[in-house]
Length: 104
Image 1 (cartoon, one colour):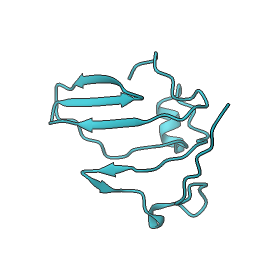
Image 2: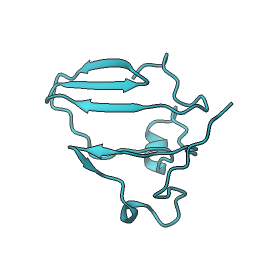
Image 3: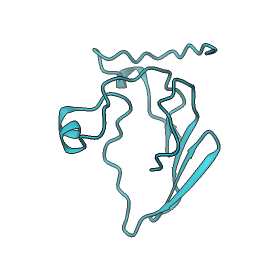
Image 4: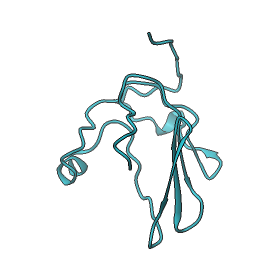
């Protein structure tokens, strides 16, 4: 959404995405808020975090998406947790435990 905000810098970040209504979307990273207005109803069918499938890589060649290193926790959709153990792909590296460590 904004190339001036880096989230692949090796540091931990807090990311918040909110759809306020059918037209207004808030993207917040580490307290920096960007509000976007969409002319038509925004529909989100799939969300990719980290590794992307081959179709998306072909369609958006500027995206890498080969690796995700980090901790994903507290993912909520409509005030309900969406990451549970049964959602984790059996060959993925995602676990149901986040171990945070201080980075130098």
